[in-house]
Amino acid sequence: MNPELAGRSYPATEPYLVGREKVREFARAVLATSPLNLDPEAARAAGYADVVAPPTFAVVVQERTLAQLLGDPDAGIDFSRVVHGDQRFTFTRPIVAGDELTATLTVTSVKSLGGHSMVTAESAVVDTDGAHVVTAISTLVVRGDE
Amino acid sequence: MSAAPARAGLAVGDVVVEQSYHLTRESLVRYAGASGDFNPIHYRDDIAASVGLDGVLAHGMLTMGLAVQPVVDWLGGDSGKVLDYQVRFTRPVLVDPASGADVAVVAKVGVLDDDGARIDLTVTFNGETVLGKAQVRVALA
Image (cartoon, rainbow over all chains, first blue to last red; front, side, top):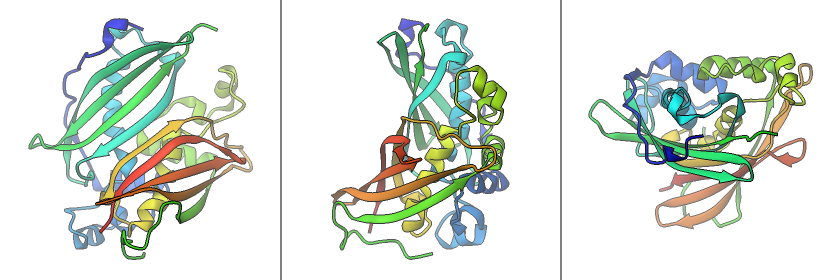
């Protein structure tokens, strides 16, 4: 991995339009049962514009930024050796169907530990007003030669 | 669906909710489609074996995604009350092609503060924890 990667940012991703059926599909996949995730009327009654995405849905938008990082030849990350180390989401508000979201990834740290490398990247997700929705933070472990 | 819990009446160490989930290979295929994560180690035994795994694994993000659901239910179903959620992936969840896998979640109050709480999750498969530092910050009235 390129040790100079820390501090690097990638261009904002193309807008991702959050669809109601996509939220429902994702909710069912993570075994969510709340009507707020599934039923627009229940979500509106709770004050949301449409169905509310489960917390980890943000990974769908974040993934597009990780693809930029992993696909950057200059980053030098061998995807076949990548293991997901940890994951965090910090919310200003939940993602709701109808949101149009863009994400910008910044590499915050690069470390070496016992032959392995670790890269931590923060992807800031904003709506069409530029208002912050969620930041998704991943640490990826790149296993060394065995 | 219960009403959202109040901060008053909670104490550090209280178990607020417990839930078990049964995963099958179908669960993994469903999550792959919903999330867009089509890494074949999550549905092909031959590829999982070829990279040295003991079998097909659940997506870590599926385990993370389901582990917070009992907390969302406890919050009255409102995932907007989840302010921050983090986990470390420490052990894999192997999903047997015939018998699947059972994942258990216990959610306890870790910290109480002025506007909410930190809920600490213990997530186990086969008697071992699979997530480390699994913490959910929630807003409470």
